[in-house]
Length: 406
Image (cartoon, rainbow, N blue to C red; front, side, top):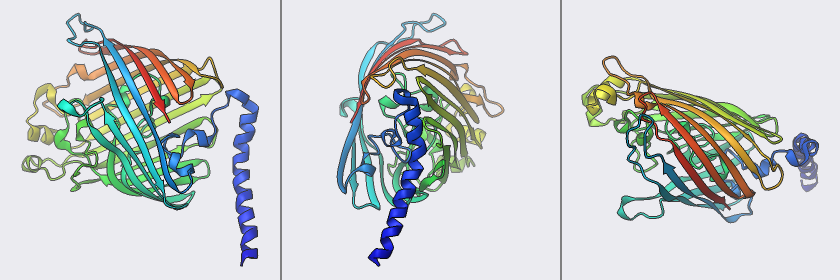
């Protein structure tokens, strides 16, 4: 039996080496300008620090990240009125990744986050960002259950400060895609040739917390989450070319959760969000883009249940997109990337008949800045944001960020 299994093991190892050969040849051709190898990019949709447990020996794995942000907003809005905002510096997040590899099949992975430096005075909080168990069966099909990050957009799973430009995450991926978005559920994930996928069944959002500014407050974050209404989320990416990720995702599910006020008003809202994304690095050039559209059914009945009127209406359609371009002047060394990002976002692109959209929710943001990495695990960021709304209430700002991963 041992003699019979040896050739099979040798054949499996040969197939693995042949599979990575094209990527290695491409890296040799590009030299120092090549994108980092897959192992340095993380695994299963996670960044390297978050995915550290997968490459570790059985036992405990430790990682983490942190970020501090200084914001200096303008004292005036674009219409000349006082903004009422002041400069502030915030140790935004200190995060610990704690994993445990039971064996080559069963893996526990968790992220524990401390926000805003303290929990006193209701300033910050301690949260579980994800905590799940994996059963790694084969590359094409693996099982996952627990509190999971929803595989939507470019930032929700890859949210470490070294993974995106700008001191703050893109507004589209903080508002329309309410990162960091996590819920309780289970599903499957894997890779099939040049395609990578993740799909889960999770508890739905809580529409009783929706507002004119979007669905962000409707996240249940795994805390005694109402599960009268469930949701499905799925994602597929093409990853067959080194340095390129292109794909899309969809989320859909009920959000009423049998809340008494909604039931009394006859509201049975359903949420659907669809997005397509591109992340491409070629030599010193990096391009990112995302387009997202979201719909809410039964918005008029939901407004009635929440006693919202006029421009305070929850949007029945939300939309946003952004395009970002960066150039690395120190490729293969420290890393210095000036970048430009253009965003457009409207959480009330459409409202129910009889309601009005607030023009302050129709936003355009131009971000100009630079990202400096003295080491791949340490990042310094400086940017200027030019913010416009259709109501002329935008507030420009200068931001500085400091981040690390380990």
